[in-house]
Image 1 (cartoon, rainbow, N blue to C red):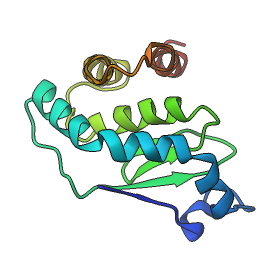
Image 2 (cartoon, rainbow, N blue to C red; image 1 turned 180 degrees about the vertical axis):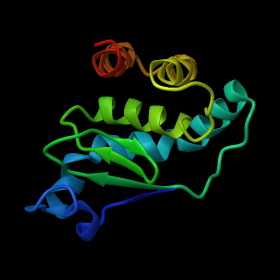
Image 3 (cartoon, one colour; image 1 turned 90 degrees about the horizontal axis):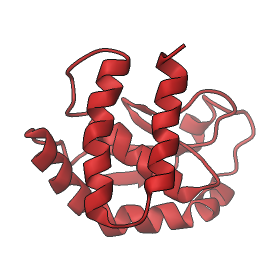
Image 4 (cartoon, rainbow, N blue to C red; image 1 turned 90 degrees about the vertical axis):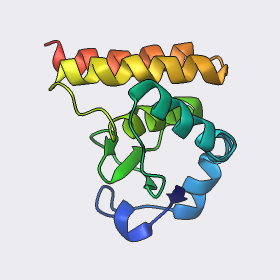
Length: 141
């Protein structure tokens, strides 16, 4: 699993993209990603009971509208790099959770995300709550 910063891919979401600045602004996220990615994979596999493909590319992009998505795994830049890290875990879990649709699927994904975040012991409760808020906003209209 590796991070990718692709100018041509970013241009699909935003006209003016500065990859160097994007990398600089995601330093904390990159450090969390590199330090914890192997443990995250093991935890997701444990809680889902499924094998996770370890050859997933993770694209970091700037975009004005829309959010992150899991295929291809694309993370929208957030000033709060810890929030980006939680979103990364959430999108990664989507690769193994295929039960349910809409809010039911999001609930199944977030149930695993919450356990993974707890086991990482990084004090990411605020960021997890924000992710749950995104799902409620999207599906509970």
